[in-house]
Image (cartoon, rainbow, N blue to C red; front, side, top):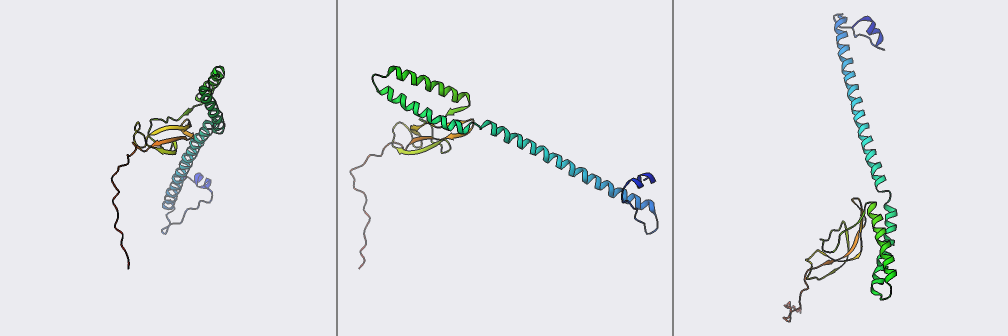
Length: 195
């Protein structure tokens, strides 16, 4: 180590060797400084990697926030969709409501197209296996048409926004075919009398 470099390192003082060898002490000091520099570089690299991970995580969170920002609006619009569907059902049952029915159906088609444009899609129900992540069972009923655990009817449509459930579909679930009552008496359990 040159004299100039020794003067540039603040607070550097060679440790005097027992035998007075200043060069040996300088070599030890250089190794210590090199180790400290290596440790500082390692800490700097770790801090840089941590910062990059933070940036990636922040970007992902911001994308999720943007992606699902319409969630509250979509929930409110779904109530309108439900009312339109009810109006269609009533109009279909009435004999003198052809023009009303046609108008309401056009609005319903437009609303569904708008929802799909914004990645809000209906959750499949009738004929699918009951999934508690997508469906809300409101009743069970026997069914010859559907096996046990299959959705038989839909009471209210459910929707997803991308991969997130906006609201689950309310459904009826099959318990399988109805068990027919037999005329055979049920086995009786003996009663014990304590006396």
